[in-house]
Length: 406
Ligand SMILES: Nc1ncnc2c1ncn2[C@@H]1O[C@H](COP(=O)(O)OP(=O)(O)O)[C@@H](O)[C@H]1O
Ligand SMILES: [Mg+2]
Image 1 (spheres, rainbow, N blue to C red):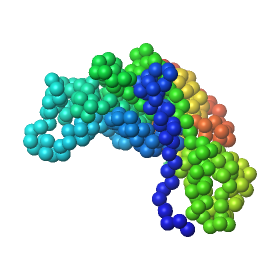
Image 2 (cartoon, rainbow, N blue to C red):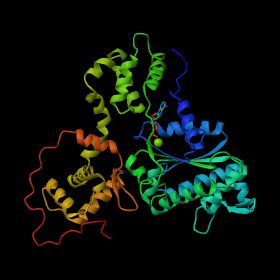
Image 3 (cartoon, rainbow, N blue to C red):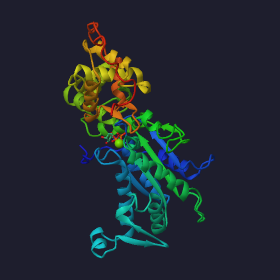
Image 4 (spheres, protein in one colour):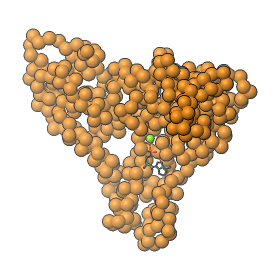
């Protein structure tokens, strides 16, 4: 058996080249200095950004600043962006932070401008434009700012402001005339949630109005073929997977590498790789079942009211208004009892705490994980709820029809 036990990593250099071509304008269609790419969770976006896109940008002498807005769910997205730029500046400075600090060097001169690194992005501090400009001056490179899970920025006002600041930086820095071909600053925004990412680009009042949200290509047959060959090289000769069956399984589980790996592992250890076909013919449903166990257990831990809120959100999508009379009536019908605004507020708070429901700074709601909506729709409808006798006590105050009560 081969000695290598490392993790399998499939590279997509061609895709990286195409994306960088588009960003820099090395394409017949001119530069698109902002790209928004979306694909469901756990399908390989971050892996691609780190292992394929970053090296390609490097090859083209473009400095990369990477920030994952999910790296710390509690941190303000605005701070995370500023911190990533700060770290890049410190690296460019070549001085360990502690030395710089003790030498009183937190303020570093860059040409005519002085940047106080510690206060980047703060009200009286350097703007992101200044900071990114300083980074370009120091490194002598164009910069790509890669914001992973960018939709998370719109959860707070500070995050949204950071996105506006990035747009301003892009517009200002890209008009600098220093003989560079193509834009000085390019932005790559990725997200696991198409609708949410879309909110950054769709409205005139949104930071990246005009940019389009594009599907990030999912891993395909070339990935499963390479993975199958890699696995088979590590399995006994009578325990081998068939590439076509592996691809079919991968597709059935939404092209998520981890779930495929888990399925193959279970089958190889239990029944033997040859049985993958049999497992497959038992139906994609069985495979999906593994994917959906997570949703099932999350769901069964919710109160009936929390479930009713999610059902309403799934049914209404962008039109969802959590406290409207119609929504309250729907919850009441599901719960079989009158439902008032405060208990809905409490339910939504709990759902947000559990990362099931997302709310933007502007009061829009969405499911954190769109897969859950798919699961809910495909799932056998629950045993019919008893029809609610009374939706509200007669004469009780009508609930407010919009927004979160103060
Ligand atoms: N190109 C790839 N080759 C091998 N494994 C991959 C690849 N892309 C993703 N994976 C695996 O799939 C899982 C999810 O990948 P990740 O990049 O975190 O997804 P996302 O950022 O879309 O949520 C990880 O366990 C990762 O190792
Ligand atoms: Mg990711």
